[in-house]
Image 1: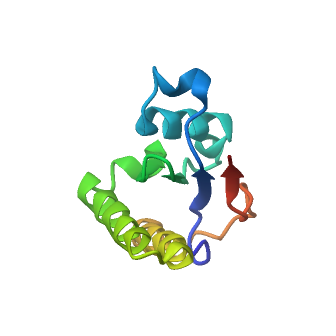
Image 2: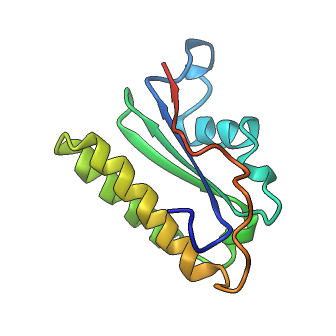
Length: 131
């Protein structure tokens, strides 16, 4: 999903928000926190996207960097989240994540110029699992 464009996608799957943060933080804020802590915001071309799945809350959040924000609509990202949630409800867990990453990659391919050289991986490709 990261081929053909300079975008960087980081997947985080978390069992639940840590107890110390649960009363003051919803899944959106937690995703924003991880976006910052994991350096997804710090890609050279501001091309980072965080796909965050919270299993306990059964929610999906997509946080994207400022390089993408002005060229896309919130509706595109909400549709991807909806697609992932539908597959999760059907207990197609792996397919949900893979399809979500592919859809994010498609959005990024439309956004970024084909002639821009694909940079080295700035973020790891393996999903980050947090219990």
